[in-house]
Length: 83
Length: 83
Length: 142
Length: 142
Figure 1 (tube, rainbow over the protein chains, first blue to last red):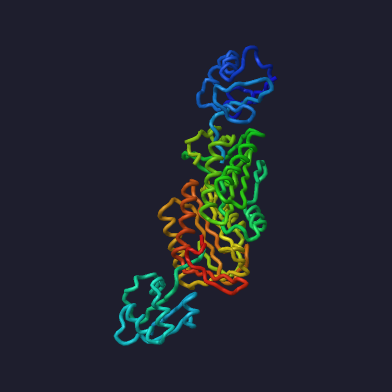
Figure 2: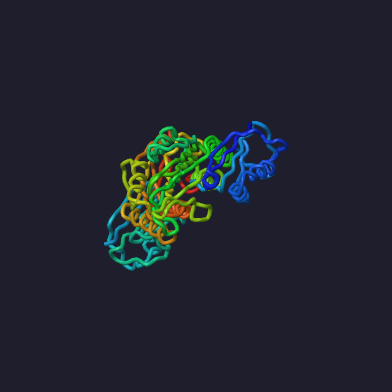
């Protein structure tokens, strides 16, 4: 299983904050996972196409082509605006 | 009359914090007043010879050759160290 | 020390605690307090909601604090950030750096709040009379 | 606002007052607190005595505050400086700048304490076990 999390405006666009899924067959990096999620439909395709999104794997920001393995927690979010 | 004030280590060296005196005859600027005060004796001569001293006239720092007039408040002090 | 909380914090009580724990070590304590403004881009704000990424937020703040302590000679650091719904003039964030020397305290405090603003997973949403909008970097989150 | 006083001040109470008066205007408040250190040049300090020039001190602090307000866009400023005998860990000085933007608040707060240290007529005398000594600029008054 992998844990997926979506935050802020992205969470609102997708209508979901987090979910657990089986690591899809043949997917072993972020581009693969993103493409797999985008096949869910129009809103996923456009929301995840936003190049300003950051991606964290296991709560560390990573490059958008990072590898993933079973058990990972993967989060997508817009640029941060705290403070 | 003019008001004279001495602060911090200078006050301790001179053994006096403030005094009121008549503006000495012929004295119309700080170098003249300083020379006049230095004639008071050894401790005055050496203490006021310290080129690091600041001088304020009427509570504003001035150049060491500033003019003075009757009624002025004149203060000598070492570099400040507050804060 | 870092804290992420919905409850308000008391800047004064925090600074007084740090001062008491200081024991004469630090000569300088610099604090930054971030408050909710009632106006952004000319629009009146009625509420500000802070969303965060529980778990990652704490890691990010601890990392920022550790980086500051590596880079400067500090006797104490503190980061408190609130989450959830806030109203104008509410406290949002408190960052404190204490040091023997004031320049170090200033640089460290400013580094921590600057880094927090770009690296810690918090997101602000403003509620205006016309509706809600997410703040994006650059639309006045300075 | 400026104050010169022998009594202690409460940084927390001052910041909380400024926050309440702020009414959502400022988003950033930066404070500097100067504390008496127990060690200077490796010597143990038992007391620190602050002498000042009554009258001129207040003028100098008001001028510093006015300069900061000319140079930056501030919603509030505060300078409090204590005088008389102090002991290690006591508050010496508090400088606060509030602004809509944090960079302005940082720059203004740092300007005010830097300028105070070079332009306001205060003098520090340390009491060590061996006796008293006046602090001179450079012998660690940083």
